[in-house]
Length: 119
Image (cartoon, rainbow, N blue to C red; front, side, top):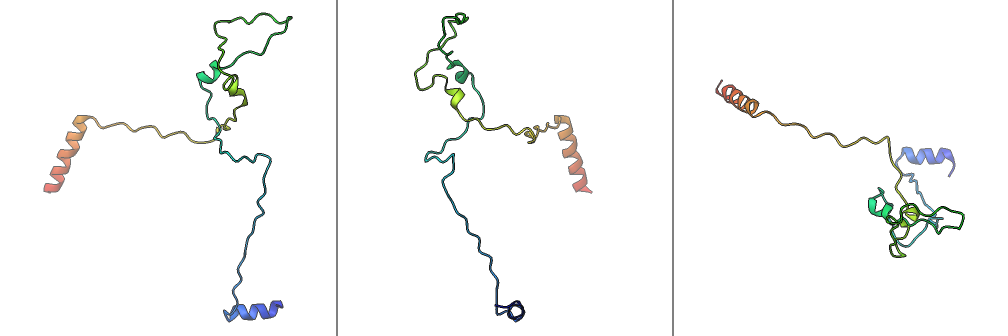
């Protein structure tokens, strides 16, 4: 329609313009059929599962043989491959819990309320 006719029809409320939005959805580089939540913190258990890489003859021996935990193959060094959630340093923390009134102040406020109700 020409602009003049369209304006006339809109003025007479015979024409209603509607905006339709459409999206093309395709598989991205991080597509996966399983939903995996990123880790939020590094726990001592994750660190304890670290096993140092195999040593070559020129490397010195592993200094803490008692700390070299040998877990199963499913968790060996798994914390290095886990996706971690990025930290948001600009977010506000939890508000501090407010304190409580002293018991004598509670009694005083109750007595004050009683006297105010009496007049």
